[in-house]
Amino acid sequence: MIEKERKRREKILAKWVPFYIITCTFIGAVLGSLLIYFIQDEFPYEVLIAGVVVTIILTLFEVIKHKRKRGDLPEYDERLLRNVFRFFAYTSHISLAVLFVSLGIFTLLGIESISILYLWIGFFSYIWIVGIGTIIIKRR
Image (cartoon, rainbow, N blue to C red; front, side, top):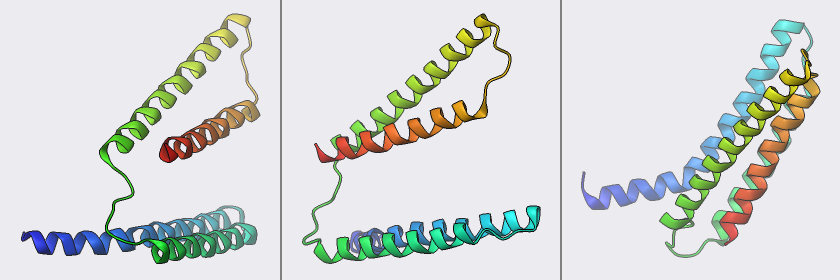
């Protein structure tokens, strides 16, 4: 492939990939709603409305971001990508270690059933910590 053609495709992909991700997220919300409708015979309108609102907000965010960007300076360099990758690796291993140790402690205490609420709290706290940590790492 010619170098000029590769650069042209790279610019096109850099512009349209975020919109593709937003579109796939909306399609996922629609398919999830349809799946719930077919399983439970009740259509969850709130999921569809939330999907539309999030799609509009993310699209506006991307349009504003593209309008404000000047020049060909990339957003990420190799050091930033390496730091984010290492952060994801460390946080996932630490969360698995905490889950494993807590499972061992619960087993030693004789607890045979755990409320699913505690698993959801652990899951969402992991997502929250990773999201906030990634924002902090990106800003440095």
